[in-house]
Image (cartoon, rainbow, N blue to C red; front, side, top):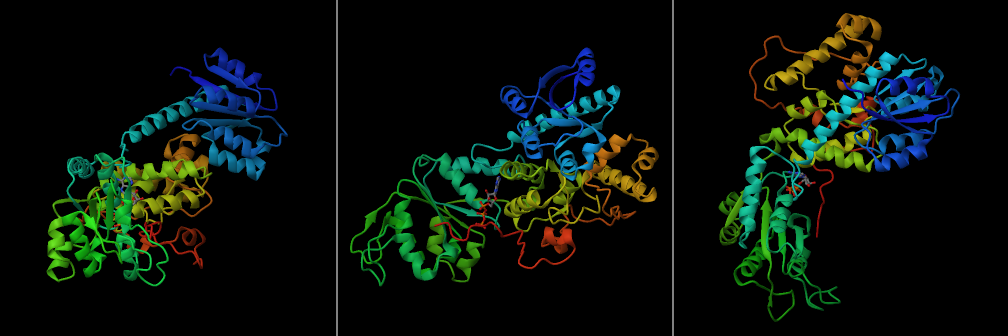
Length: 500
Ligand SMILES: Nc1ncnc2c1ncn2[C@@H]1O[C@H](COP(=O)(O)OP(=O)(O)OP(=O)(O)O)[C@@H](O)[C@H]1O
């Protein structure tokens, strides 16, 4: 393999003994004498690999090192340090959280070159992976590549080309509002307002004046005239979410508005013309609501001119890993967490979960995991999910991963968690074993258990629900004790209660 280019930051000590041989072997080394210089260099040039050389008896400015290491997303860093430096808990934490690997002085040049080449390959892999995921999110903020989301995008484009009402069906949290926004953005009304109203979240006493507005003195407390939300959406789109919750008398007013394009504020004597497209959504079956007399049939037919169904997440599991990665990138960018992504076990657990709360639940679980985890890779526990203990229906890839993890866990247990002995038994180097443990979220200091794989598994559907774990609170899981005042509602938390 060709030697690549590296950024080398020296914090105290003499780096020439390491750098000169590397340069002689063809490595393209850019040197920075301190962290400020490293920051300046990184602003102009991206390095796949960074090396931090820490001199003896140096007080490492941990926050500044962390900022430097995180300045180039996608870079992998290796630190070369004295054994004493690793005695400091803060530095140890930094190495474990932010660095691809560390080497202790005196440096074995052959080993160092191998580490740098691995870091280079890993950075390359990350770049390719990130690039692939960037294509998964479209201009409408809709992530997914599977057939269901592809069909949804086609339907959105078709209905956006017209001005007729649209009815969006789908379970709670599946992405109905996102689809409504996408319809608006793709339509000729995109320059106008998009007003989202959750009909179920507004009190029945207020909803009429909220939607249609009121005149001054129309009722007690109406001290001034007020525009309603339909008027506020003039020239654009109004999204009426949970339209099934609209009181029956208001259904009549809404029908009149759909037919005549006029509204009447509460207490007004004249009608106002408004130019608003209606997109409505409901997670209950409106046809059934019509059958039991809870929803006006004429309004239903008026709204149901064009209908779109957003599939529940369990019917498009192929999108789970990219959605998770997308949410991870968004959350990690906002937090100071050192976490780098998901372990294979976490991905397997996500693929085995049935997602009753759909995409919103996935977002909530990822958001909390980024905050709660103390590892480089998010594991199933951080997501509040049970590890996928049976690879049936998940394909060879996941089955191999599970088997690999089991072999490592069993060997570690047998040899009393002695890395050198375990590596020898498994026929890999210590470094490879450390990397595999990281990949599988196996910590040396905690109890590790193999998966209980059934020798002859009974056939079961592709998806496995984990009801016991689905409401698990990661903090409680971590502490092994209930935490008062910390309520984890994976499926509903974060959902806006009333948008307008
Ligand atoms: N394909 C997707 N790509 C990216 N984010 C998505 C996708 N689908 C849904 N989301 C996100 O998931 C969350 C829930 O979506 P949304 O609010 O659109 O669901 P909903 O079906 O309208 O829910 P409810 O019926 O409870 O109002 C939002 O944060 C949304 O941005």
